[in-house]
Image (tube, rainbow, N blue to C red; front, side, top):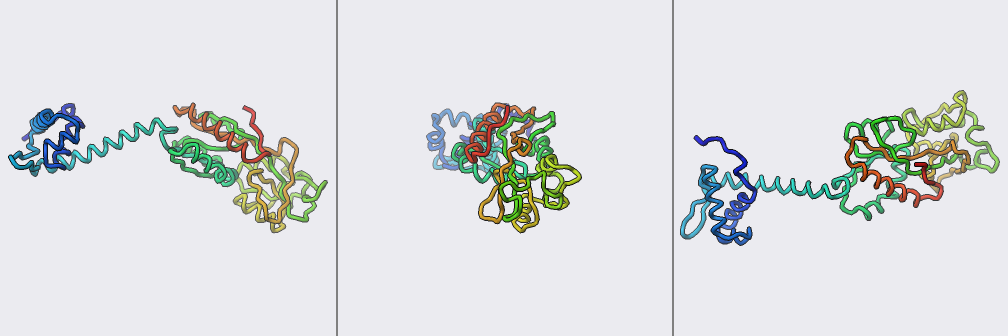
Length: 308
């Protein structure tokens, strides 16, 4: 019965020797592959056999034979070396931004319109970074971020979660979207506040854009018709069902929708990048925020720099 083994006596280099000998059937060839003198390699393998208490190789004058016990040892050594290489890859990946992988999500009224327009530039500037994108409602995204399921989130300010750090990126104006031919589509026509409540279309509860749209009109005159997504709202506008507020990046051409600029500051939203305050990659997130800021501002002249 073998006594317990102290792992401090095992080295990855010794395992490399054993695997090389098994694969090439020669101590001489293995020493050449491993870049070590053959006597040194032989000596280390004998020490390993003594340390484990098994004979890994049967040595003859003509060839080297792996014993039955040695075969099991070699198979396991290959697995250990494979895991060691994986560990090394992880360590090397830590030299890449965000350790080589970034899980980034945005609120549903921003992600589908921003991500497709910046992902090409992102790939060019960060070719080795694996990017996982997502979208959702603000509360859901914040919950996932705090749970460590996301690395960073693009959301609309204000954000009062004290466990998060936020950096403002840009200010995005809202446009009044009205059906072609609607009074609101004409110069001097009614604005968002002047519309009848029945003509205002809003997103369902949970969307921050809904709250921003409600803040710009009297609650007693709030819309009675809602939609689950911004795209559905735009379809309803195109069908002549009413008017809504649309973020500038979500404007689409070709549909029978007239978009009007709104000059008042309340018809804007401030977009920020948020991450956990406890995350040790703070400097990397600040660099990412600067990159996102520049990329977004290059997309649309209607966007402007957010107040820091």
